[in-house]
Image (cartoon, rainbow over all chains, first blue to last red):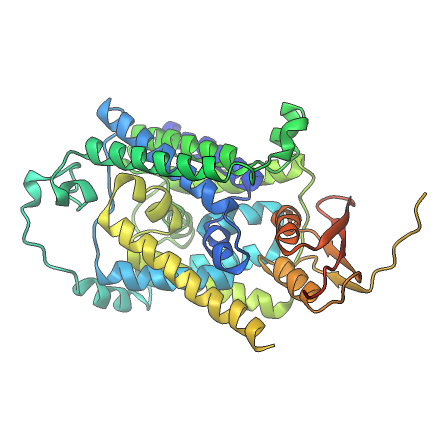
Amino acid sequence: MDLDTIYTGFFVGILFGFALQRGRFCMNSAFRDTILLREFTLLKAVGIALLVQMVGFTVLAMSSVIELNPAPLLGLANVVGSFVFGVGMVLAGGCASGITYRVGEGMVGAMTAVMGLVTGILMTSSGTLKTVMDELLKRQPEFTADVDDLVVSSNKAFTLANVVGVPHEVMALGIAAVAVAIWGFFAWRNREEDTDEAGSYRLVERIFKRGWNWFFTGIAIGLIGMLGFWLSYEAGRPAALGITGGYKNIFNRQFGIGADPVMDWIGMFIIGTIAGSFVAAYFAKELKLRAPSPNTLILTFIGGLLMGFGAVCSGGCNIGHILSGVPQLSLGSLLAGAAIVLGGWVTSYVIFVLPQRAS
Amino acid sequence: MTEPITPTITLDERGKICPYPDMDTMTTLKKMEKGEILEVLLDYPLSVERIPRSLKKQKHKLLTIEHLDGPNHRLLIEAHGLE
């Protein structure tokens, strides 16, 4: 790994952390709020980011700037791992990227969640929980299809495009076009509901002082994801953004696990993300060291632990599988994404909705 | 100058993690009588933006959002009461 090029990871991280903090971009909130508060604001931001990347990655791959790298299909490990991840993120009060940006804001609950996440990652990648993961990985589905004819990438992962047997660009651009058409229809029908009150502020103030609206957030996250894929590819890490791998890299280095002598691109990216969020929170005057009750701190640690286990089992967190994986149409990522959402919904229902009904 | 409003109930949600500020606010309002005032102290930026949207949906009236120092905010809400 080239030392000069990994600093682009730090740079992309700064942008990513800044955008996460300004847009309050968290997939735990995005999915959970749909059943809890009937809120779709963050979900719309996630949708826009996925659309931008679905088109963006395809264009970058077609112009040979990057090579697509969809996550492999892991079957049961995707389902179990990502479901556990979804349970964990509700307990932790944020997804992998959500708790990472909130560390930069000074939220102690997010810091304990990250400690849990790191513990879970290390226990599963090289500790006691590795046997559990290996058991899950043994139960991989057998496919008879001849993947060689269908590949979109050198890693021969199954994607929505190659199992159907159409070129990636046709499938990706087709899905994006259909999504835009459906979205446009509903946006037009509900055009009264969306009012953006930020329009009266000056641009500088809108970027640095105010929370971003969902549309701007989605576009920004999508573009940063594209930039990240490109710079990461240039640095010798041919993959889109992820969170789990970054923490694993940082802490493997600290504890002397593995052979990689330097911090790699994705580790620098994580450090940049926390720094970027810190800068954003500082300028917006949202920086404050603040902590919930001790009970909550323990709960967020446990949540983080479950997320770490789940992400390593499934081969990615909500960023690796949903933000980066779904736009590449990886079957593994689609399965993992669905399991994360389901795990989040079931847990939110049990710990938030049921107690309300009972009272 | 208007008379200072005396809140019926005060919730201190500072330091709490997502989504407790929202959940506590909305469930407390549900149990309040029409016209009663809820005061909420907040320091979680997402909730500062999200609670006003939820209030609108539940027809509670947001009287003021006061920006204190840093991320700290003080909300005064008039409960809509049960239908």
